[in-house]
Length: 173
Image (cartoon, rainbow, N blue to C red; front, side):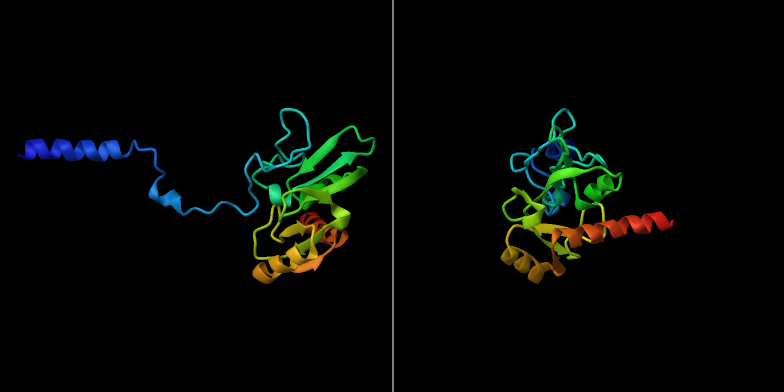
């Protein structure tokens, strides 16, 4: 009897590993807050590397909700960054950019940084920094995010100044 049962049990165990279902340990894994589907992301760069941050190479879809974009001064080149941190890194090289934009967390559309309301320092993990920076097109959306996640509301220039502080830390070491 055991000669029949053991091979059957062994076959069941081996075949169960071939199923299409996700393993139990991955079922409750959280998608990163910053991530969206490829269809939801607006990518402005051209070429084979259009999905990657110009400065650090991180995936712009994976870190979309912190993404920023801008154009070269002549308007011929479109740049996209995974974060305000990488935008500041590029600006630190002395480049002049025009028409800077940021992703509105709520609508996932690119909006002018001049119209954006940032929540800085929330408990939601940031991109390329320990101090998160998320932008919204409506102050009410930013306020709701702040109530749920903490942080401080500020405009683009103040958020950019906070991003610049990261580089002051790097330069001291």
